Image (cartoon, rainbow, N blue to C red; front, top):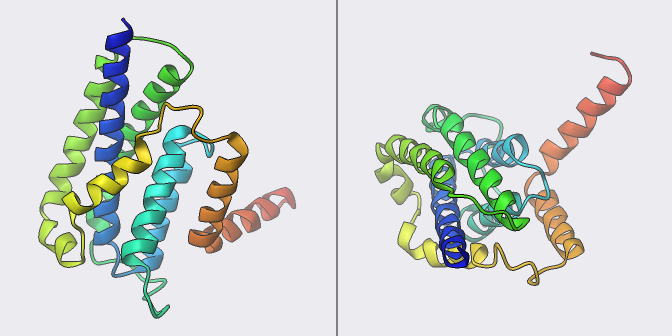
Length: 207
């Protein structure tokens, strides 16, 4: 049973890496409009995950690694407020991303608290969702690669961000929160400001 559980954990890490690579590829497809790309990242992180979830932490770090290391304009100039040429393609993949994220989050949660299950139902849903994402992104593979996406070159770095997923001794909760807040305010200041403004309007009765 312990061996089967360990195998399932290893499979979950691999699925997390695959999910992250598709997120990274999507970021490269959207990088002709930085605002559009960041909104895609923020939507994935905000809509489908609890902020402090282990999956949310990893995806946020992957997004930060891809953005700061490979996409962020070095001169600070970028198109903002328009719409990426590839947005419609990515928009059609959001539901599949969401499905994969939700099932992976649930499976990670069960394994993190010490539970055990067959896991095949979860992994099948995740694999199906990622396969649909892959099929949609395949038609724009030339574009993502022309924009700098290098799947194999990034895979080892992304795996490094995932390998400690079930190692509870790696980081303390406060360390994770500091890292999370730092990344959020570096990548998504405009969207966080929008959220605060919307919350204030709702509280004051504008809606």
